[in-house]
Length: 233
Image 1: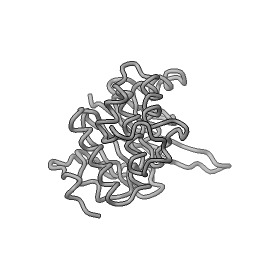
Image 2: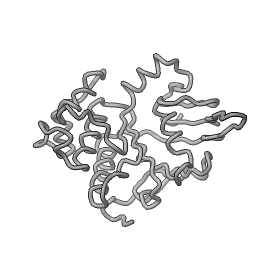
Image 3: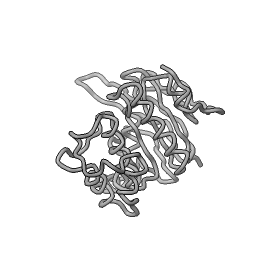
Image 4: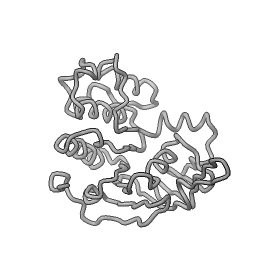
């Protein structure tokens, strides 16, 4: 059994008399410890897939499995526990609490976790050992995203989900964030899933899943992932 499995997953919305399919028969697998990039154009269904995998949205039909557990069968209470303990989220716009320091933002996540990592050490690992007492407004975009990653990692989750994590960053800073995510995957063995519209990023992935119009176009294993430093776009 694969670490992540989607089996014929459908997400359907009804707007008036019209039915809209955000995900239409989505099936794929991801193995534990892989760095997976889910790529597709805007509106392809990437975020819908990520939200269902992260327990922030439910599927209309089909089966979603993580580490042998059927996430798609969870009730609302169990979904809350799943989001709290098993999944770390990294968003495009950081979503930090503005009146808390970098350290306090990370501590906030660790305090609701079963087996959290040390917040100070986690911030050091993402290169912010000297910025712990700064508020988000005192940090650059790249530094704020590093706090966001530290916050996700401090929960010690099974899975790290990243929604366009470099979308609000410049080229150089974005590359440094992608390197941090790739290094985190390699060094900790955590499964990392990144969704993006940037096809160039597929070269750095262990697995590439292409999405178009709510369907999976391909699910390919990359035998020789490239270091981020070698990728240009």
